[in-house]
Length: 160
Image (tube, rainbow, N blue to C red; front, top):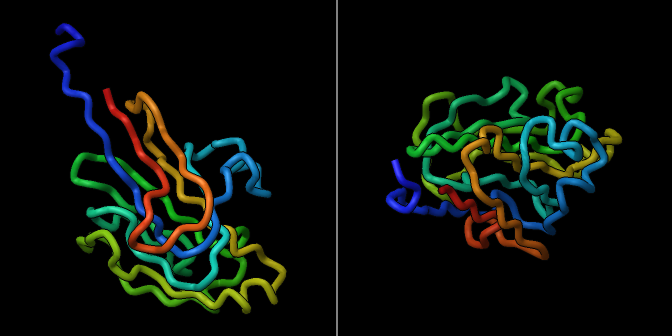
């Protein structure tokens, strides 16, 4: 099949939380900074509310509510990992609002967490938002600066 018959398409990912975008390469955890799980950005949150960055389905939510996996109808997979080393908190300070297989829309509430508790336990609240199956992507355009949950675009993905 000739490439010029393929339709180029884009997909936008909105901010799952309010805060400041941090380049994924600057996340103080090499699993994320070295893109072992995939490419994306991180957000240094201003509040402890996490919403869905896409329309899709919950494919995984950890029992500790510190990480959520989503999949769009087009098959894009996104991991939101709330904080760094927060699995060690065993769910304390986290409240989940979704379960596996739930359908969600952009802006739907996924998780609430206590930023002060996370910091008080010596953990970073920096939250990576990673595309875990970006093999088919032609380009990932990452935004920077302050973002508002459910409103501002953090990543634009271009497929070919």
